[in-house]
Length: 238
Image (cartoon, rainbow, N blue to C red; front, top):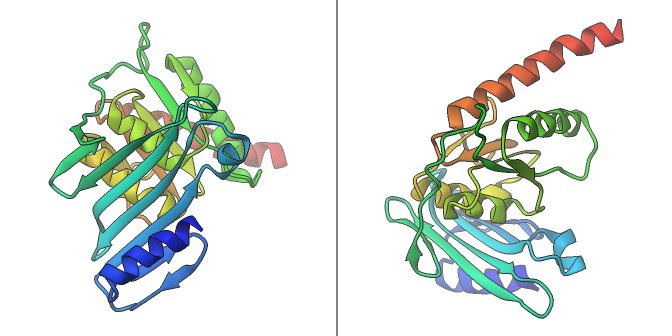
């Protein structure tokens, strides 16, 4: 129902645009320069349990690049429900409920006075990326103030943009999970890349977003752990 409501508005106002919805797949003109990436309910398990970390996420790409974004976060929980609306346009800044927002300035990650709060997520499949992320979770817990796992990618990225956490990473995401959040982070002054540090696009399956100050340190540790696991795996098999 959420996706149907969004589609009705988009198709009425932008009938010649291409749409990618989590539920409905590809709809519209495949030659369009515009692609709408719609996640009608990010954080389904949280929603089902009434846990306050889920959202509706809509991102628009122009020629493959994020151009506009909106994420409506449902927060507070039973008897205290409220919403926060995050938005951004390319070059126009990022906003929460109409007020401009900025990522955190914190740059400490791997020293003796850890000041960073980090966020990650785990997919439903317990495959190799899931196992790798368990190791990353442990490593980052050791060198930061803590790691959280709220369970909604769009919300997690918006929290980086809001400056209440310093970074977020995750494997196995889809374009509708990321299209809005990555633009909101960038417009709030943060940095976005693949987890290996490569240039990010919404068709990638991993993402690292941060306040920018921590980005290089996090990539270094992620790459180190991944290389270490690759060396251990053949030895274990033998």
